[in-house]
Image 1 (tube, rainbow, N blue to C red):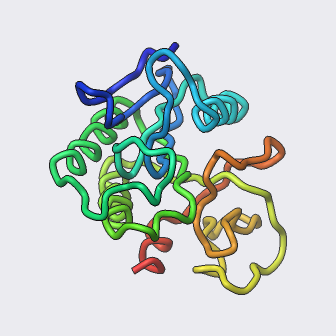
Image 2 (cartoon, rainbow, N blue to C red):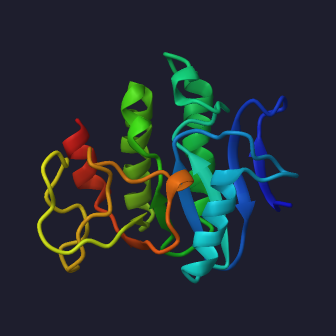
Image 3 (tube, rainbow, N blue to C red):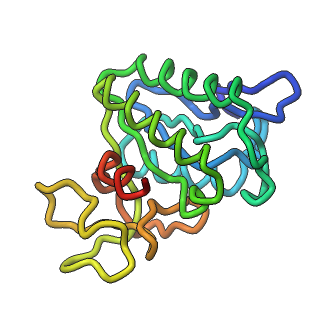
Length: 197
């Protein structure tokens, strides 16, 4: 089913899954669930549909932490530093194969449940900037001022009239609950990270 698949031997950690093309969308979720080389899950199915609808010819589903879990609460309290570092390395190795890779921030609000998820986001944002990548988020297109409770008044690029499609708490939305009427919009990852800290 997928021509891109990186996992550990026991398949308890999945580093990347997808279908590569000449212009893939790199999607960064929180952690992998059940999708594997032979079968999809809800998140991977929705990610693929959005990527193709937005004009990409492939996608790479990656995550801030590679440990499989259907519930973020079940992630370990402390990260395994070896797989934490390997995960970032694999994402960047894949992205470097493209010129100006584009990343969809898709981790949702559960990023706050583990400090190592926030650190992974910070590290990945630095690496993406170093290779000339750009960030996007997917959500409803809003006009006008952003409501209370958001991390920032505007995490969408300054040259855009669209407002951030973030959750009420200011995080990029997770794809499992998306609407296909939404759109990809520029996401200021550096500003987001500064507000997280």
